[in-house]
Structure formats: structure tokens, C-alpha cells
Image (tube, rainbow, N blue to C red; front, side):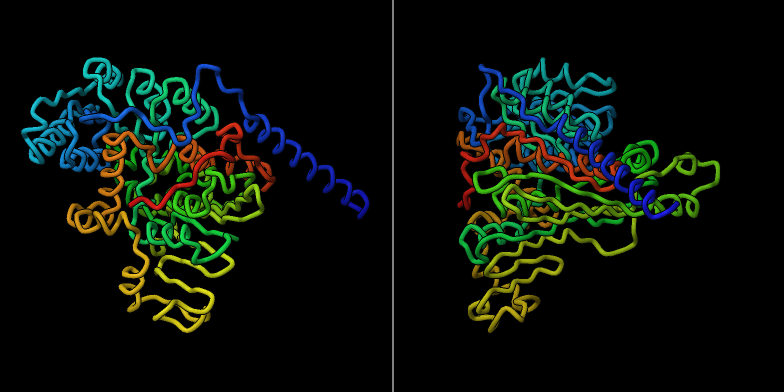
Length: 463
């Protein structure tokens, strides 16, 4: 191929790829008109409840933790539990009764049927439904829960495709029911401290953030009939892009006040490495005729995406659940006056951290960590951090999240995470897949708020 032909070929194929990517992205990013009878849910406060009647769909490893801890929080009544498996439903019922058998005496169990969860909601009419099922069930379950009159709280991600995300938003706005994706990492001690420091202006104007979910989970492939690995392994094979973006992205997005008045998600580019690790692991661990050795693993082991915000800030988001390496969420936010970073937790400020470092060339970290906490801990963590550590759940972050959900419902105040945030953070998965297919072409984020983000109040430092 001579130079002229080669140049024309590259030009044509590059433009074609970009055109395909742009068309794909724009088709799902155009704001849809809000129904006249619907209500924007940013900052929505539902009528306060005197008691929160709760029901649970899916009580495997994650759902069991939800049920047990919600049962221990004052102001709740567990009224129903649903799971495909009878033993799991019975186990969670006992844990709830053990937590407080006076408040949770009449728990109804539903099990065995694929649609028993619908029957449960219709019969028991809970105020709030907590969903901890496989990813493909998240969207239909939260939508139906809201349609049947319940606030919906769902494990991450909110949904796996843009159509479902839009349907969730439309349903929340129409029914005026909360729909919150339960991003627990936003309630970690370090994440709350960084949020507090960002709100108080310690690092100045935001420039860049880094987020990740680096967590080697190949052992889950041993869960072949029940458990996370039984269904998630198929996602590793058939899907593309960043399959689990929210644990890293949620906190940094709230530091930057994205979709809450200050800035918003604009576009994303994404690339993945070759898909090698899962195949090698299956070949080493299982027989040649094992079902995991019959899968065609398409998704790259490590995905790197770059998000650009409306006002030009950048966020690097990475995902890797395959490679042998230590756990990390990165958790980094760079500002004009300093930087906050995680794994390990460390802080550097222009002019130094008062009483700890002399300038920004040195990290406050390690032995200085307790001094940082004493100086910058979030008021919410100061209030309930000790109880959270005692209750447990990823270092206490799970309990703080559950406590705040109940507190907001009892007080009739807005939730800390609204439906739009859950959708923006989850949208990284389908957008990264589209970008990869189109060789890294930029993908446009849908504006799930339909322009209302500019008037949405920022997340305050909760006391």
C-alpha cells in the first residue's frame, strides 16, 4: 500500500469509526422530555415516616448483611424477605429476629419462585425494598418496586445499559419514589474525610481525579451453582469495558459535585487490555471439559477510561478483577491547592499540612494518619463512627450508609445519593463498551437530569 492510499485508508476508517461511535453515543444521550406529571428528583425529600417498613429481595452474602444491620437500626421493621433459596431466607429471618425480636416478629418469607418478589411487595406493601440480586435483575426489580409504591434501594450497579437507566429515572420521576444505588464506599472514613476537606476548600479548585476497582476475584469462579461467581463469570466472558465502575467513581464524583450544580459528566474514552487472565486461570484450575473452559472470554483484564467533565476536568477510571495484585480504589483528587490520595491514605497541601508537613513535597501519611483524622474527620463519622466500627461491614462504611438511609426516611430529608448520580456512575459500563468497540472514540454521557443539574444543590457536609 503506497503512502497516499494508506493515508486515505486511515483517514476513512478513522472517520468511519468516529462516526459510528458518535451516532451510537448520541442516540442514547439526547435528553428526553420529562412527563408533565413527573417531578425532578434531585434534592427530592419524601414525606417523613414514623417507622420504616423494609423488605429484602436476595439475601445471599450481600443481602444477608443488609437485612441483619437494618434490623438493628432503630426505626425499622423488617416485614418480608424473598430469595430463590429457602435456607437463605430462613437464615436472614433468624438474624433479623436475633437483632431485635420485638420489632421483627412477623417477618413473611417468600422463596422458590422467580416472581415471588412481586407477590411479596403486593402483599406486604413495604416502605422500602432492598435489592441484592444479579446485575441483570436490578433494573426490572427497582422499576417494579417503585411502581408498586415502595422506595427502591439497589446494589451496584444501578443497571447495565442506558435504556434501563432512563427507564429507572422515568419511573422514579413519575412515581415520586426514591431510587438509590447503594454505593457504600462513599461512606468510608477516608472518603468522608476527603469530602469534608473538599467542601471546606482545602485543595482549591478541582482539576483531576482517579478512581478504580482493582480487586482480584478469580476465586469466585468456584461459586458455580450459587453465589456471585455463578453469574458474574458469564459477564466477564460476554461483556466489554468497565463492569464495576461505581466503587471508585462514586466518591470522587461527589468530591467534585458532579451532576450537582458545579459540573457534570460530558464524555468518555475507553480502552481495555487483552483478555488473558480468566482463560489462563480456568485452564489451570479446572478440567478441560469444565464449563468455565468452554467460555470465550472477550472482556479485557484491565480497563482504563478517561472521563471529561462539562468544564474540562478529567477523571481516570480503572477496573481489573482478574490480575494478581493488591486491592485498590485509587481514590485520588487533585486540586489547585493540594492533593488527597488513597491506597495508602495520604495528603499533600500547598504550604504543607499544618502541624504535620512543611510543604507539598512531603506526604502526610502513615504515622500522621491519626492526626489527619483528628483534624479533618467528617462530622458524620465523628457522630457515628465508633458505632459503625463496632457494627462492621467493610470497616463500618456499610453501617453508616444503612444508618443514613433510615435517618433520611424518618426525617423526610433528601438522600445522600440521588437517582441521577447512580445512573451517571453506572453509565460508565455501557459507554466504555461502546468506546472500545469503536477503537476509543469518545462517547457522550446522557444528561439524565435533563439540564436540571445546574440548579441542583451540592451535597452538604452532613453533621
